[in-house]
Image 1 (cartoon, rainbow, N blue to C red):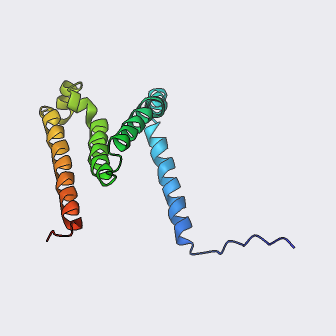
Image 2: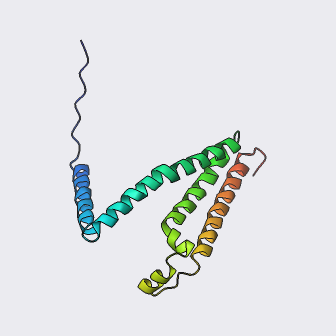
Image 3: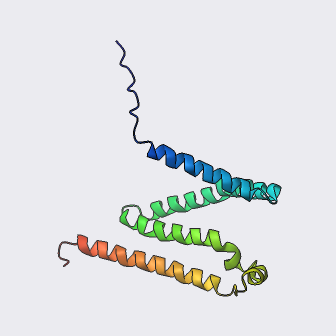
Length: 149
């Protein structure tokens, strides 16, 4: 006789309530966002998805594969390079217009703040991320050695 599929056990209604509230909040944000220039906003979202899927994803997948290939036999190094590189790349992606200096005048006009120094700060944050990662890697390697301590 074939076994019956187990019935889902109803749990607390709280997760369902939170999910419904998050859908409602997203719907509200979407209506407010698309209230203005909706064709350009829609074009921006579609373009961002296409650029990510067709350009960025193959690039960082190839970079990760190259990193894994270069560090073959030394797998402990991989995450100590992946994490700071991913965080630095995310910061670059979010702040690219200001880092590149392409919107300096508009940014200054809207915020009354100078857009100078974003590239230098991003480079310093990137160096700090890789530096902290290198220190953590050195501590991990030092703890693994039998004579360390």
